[in-house]
Image 1 (cartoon, rainbow, N blue to C red):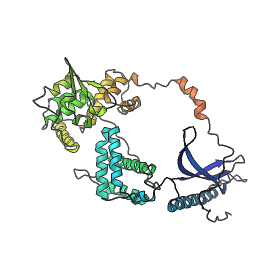
Image 2: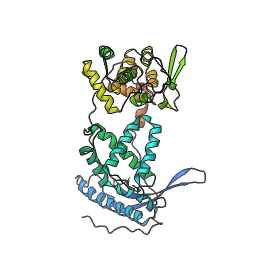
Image 3: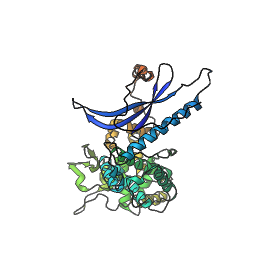
Length: 412
């Protein structure tokens, strides 16, 4: 949205309404990037929360705000249709959405490699919903229809319907790319997205020591999947990191083996492998490439892990996330430093590691809030301080456009 409706509180208790039109950025004489805006005050005012009789003016305020919003929408529509936005190309709205989506996905995968499967799955679902999409197709109705498709018709590779958590994940990614396209001047207006109720998170599952022993001693139809799961349990690496590991990523320094995780480029860190992890790898065969070559798709892996767990009489549903959670649980129980666990997991921020440990419900002295009581007390004056509104503001008339306000109805 390029035209915003602002509220400015006056000294007498009333509230003035102002339109704020964003016209892009410019560079001043000092080389600073600044926003170019045109502001104009509407001939409308909110009388305040209460009238002279002490009765709430909610209905009156709502009526005035409705008129102001109608003016704002008319002005924005006028500017878009007239093509007078200096930063927006009218032909861009007719462009193909999918090349833009592909470029955006590539950037996101480079920044966050673990999201590759999610992005690819979203693109697949979007193309199943509609094979050809232009930017002008993406409006409020489109966002609602696509969500309805995810909830009612979309399926996994196994033919099952998507879970509410998966729908929330896919739709969140869809919203992010649509919002990004609007900032890149592809969409003239940002559509309204439907509100989705949050999904109640289940408590993360981790394995007890006796369950790990059972799994270790139970045969699995796919030995590579078994070894990969146990490798994740001993290292904390995720599925996306493990499936692409090659023998060239192993750095041998005498008896110690170090693992150079390829998905953590830009964060150089050689991962020290424990004795158990080394035993799972064994010795490389002639001309080896992947450490676990027989790992399949995620759905096939989960099915194999399910059969393996049933054979070992484990009640939990096994996934690579369960192995990762077990790794975290073991390290915290062994009183390992939280910073070390953060490095092993590859988290950029310590807060991410702390949240994961809190979800697991592990009580540990290392998890105390680092913010002291003195720090909180010192910050209270700034937290409680109310934002001061300017008593006056600069009023600039719209010189660049021949826009006139629609006729206002007098409110009784």
